[in-house]
Length: 246
Image (tube, rainbow, N blue to C red; front, side):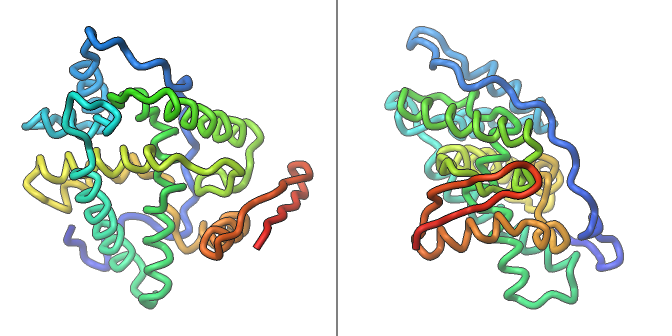
């Protein structure tokens, strides 16, 4: 992902793009005699604008460990976590020459957090492609999806980055990381190619300008780091009050 400092991808103060409409909540998994994977692979390829040389990689990326009949995404998730971290490291290093390592680390962490990646999965409806066998997981994802949808409808200021009262299911972030890994491995571990394919999926990217505008997110992540939890959110769209227990 080589770029000159003069050819930066975007301004750090650029506004976040509007979000596409949310897909419907996840449906009940298909019965064992149906194979939805070929159609799921085709849809994900269309979403990414990328055709896999080895389709087994994306099929594995779309398989949860609750499906005992197929290899799950766990190995790919491991790779995807590292690849996205390095991709964001390069991106922020090149686009923010005045930032120190501490600030760069904050930006990278914000963009690859479970909450942020889970919301990426919700916006693109990635869970519906996942091969799984866990009604409990479906319920958790549906609850989180409904919260995100409600925040969009209410124009909640923390929407793109997190801060909801419902904890983001890790499976949603895992799917994003696994799909990223499938692309990364398929293209020969080419980080520049991964970024080119995947950057649009990750929008809106949290930048210096937008991060400073997210006090709710900052409070939420501080509470998580300290082992605290939300207990209430009150108020309307103009003034809202948040309370957490330490």
